[in-house]
Image (cartoon, rainbow, N blue to C red):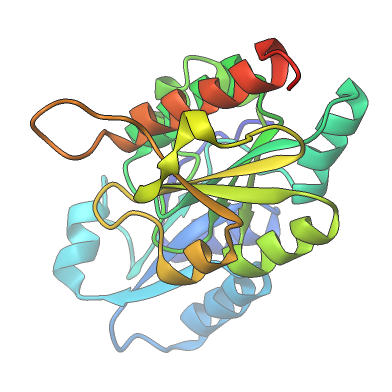
Length: 250
């Protein structure tokens, strides 16, 4: 299901969007504005666990395309999010051990779209992203995915660590990308696996890293010490593909 609007401005349009069940990723409200209509919008936003930010008028003016925001601007998802259970069901229906990508703070929608595209081609069963400090399913992410967004489910969760704990109970184990890890060719990346990719600047956060079972690194021979997040995701995803589908049993 694709939503018709990405940016919604004005009190009535925003309120109706919430009441119609649209997935609103972020709500921006004018600082100090707490009148009746705004309080109603805030109540609706909290029901859906929408990220709420109070910002100055200048910021709202920058986001507004019409200049008639009435102190409220909302950003809706371009595409509907899946549930984590949908990702596991996808693997079950294909008769395969789950292969999931966990994105810890990927903020560039182009990178998110590229990772969705790679995940689809690598046969991953879905992607999990956090609700805060991360790019969502915007039109830019959708375009960068080259259509893969229609086929690869993306779930948005409040707490990545808690989600990883729940997935561990269902048999998944997790490997994260970090230059301090073991070379990827020397690790067993088969079975039900979650590949954790960190943010473009800071990498995998400490709490998420602590929940990972293994840390792996990509060999590098150049003059800089890192890869773009989407490129790193692609390299590691295809090492997982190689081991799962083409490596000879030991």
